[in-house]
Length: 274
Image (tube, rainbow, N blue to C red; front, side, top):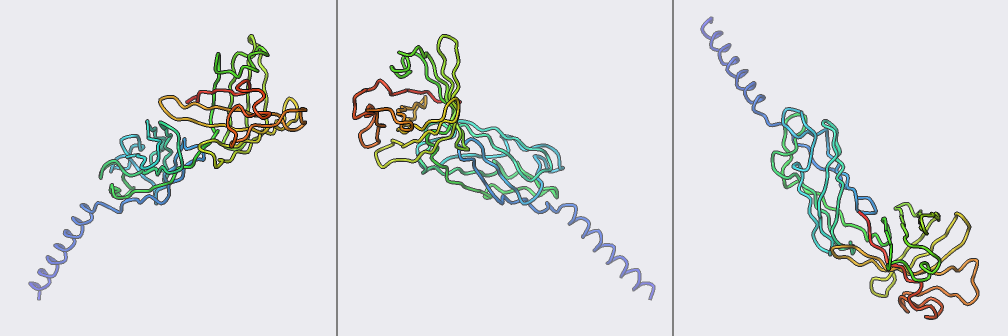
């Protein structure tokens, strides 16, 4: 009887050791990527995981550039660089994106772990590289910060003494334009609406100025990619209406304000700022 009892205890102890060993070697459950979102200006992406994540398997370290592979497939824009902001033990990471070229709406952003040991859950599970999330990028149109100076300033503005213009068209539909003449600054603010025309890459824009005076202008713009992203921009005031002045149209192209009466006098050329 005692012999059988000892044998049973030995078996149970052996099973206990085996179970403990299995628990010790268990890699844990890996976190999955639940969601990938991108801001309307394509400058930031948020990666949301199923649970808190870490850089290391011992629950330490914040995720960084070496934690992710970030690529773009399709379209014309490419990834120039990205930065990662993450707090160890939280379930989301922010990727700040810098793109080359102009997004045409056919680009897909792809985000995945860089290696099979670059993102860990609290239990020590490593997220596999097959855990990929994608998001189609949006055409941004005029959204962004733009600068014009010297010969890029529209001739009609140069005739008024303006030597440079800074424009910031925000994601929320508001804008701020600062023009400078001999060091003196004028600031215009308001909101805008944009839509892509059916004429090549030309967009339509309506600008509703609120300050320093209330008025509406209508026009067109075209963004061109390359080593430097540039924009041609032409608008004309429609409300209060100026006698004899009609806005340019996408169909007629740049220089079409008042049926071409002004030529390129009103066409502004911008360079996009980082």
